[in-house]
Image (tube, rainbow, N blue to C red):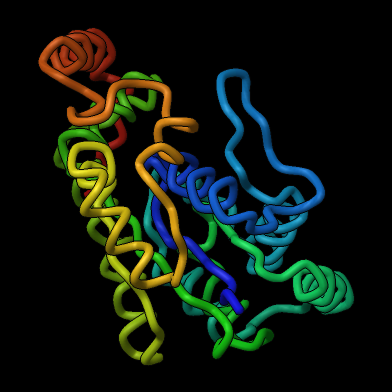
Length: 243
């Protein structure tokens, strides 16, 4: 019997591609309804996203988690230092259990995963820790008009990744690290490693069916890098640079 899967990552990391590969290729449940954007399906369970937003809101955090890393919020969530009715949480977990195997994917999990770990059966979950190359991440952010310096972007994602690694290792949880660029450029080997970890039978054809682009090369080449540079230079006064 397959175990449930949680993908831990930051935003714009290619997690939608990875989640669609696993969920479509092996029929993992993503929820009754997922978040859909204008150009793609995020494969994020609507109820999971709503509950993550609620958990974050209850801590009193009013910042922008997509642009700043907050140790304080993580600590509050980890220590349950807020008032939260667990009825919706337990109902959602029960629904997920009824639809096993399920797969969770939501960038907000880097803030809330410690909360969830206290309220669910962790021995039936495998984690995929998904990262992306710094330069590719920065280009994606800029092309989405999230103006930030390369230094800021790199530091922000490093802090999140370090926090996630600490959570996984300190709790002795089974996880597999996937670099998104390896999935796209070295697809056969990367998918084989994922299959070994999840006990699945995914194939490159499964990836081709969900990936919009050409496998064997990185998403952003020199042309997109130049485009990103021009966008950044034109809008650099708006750049986030908290570190």
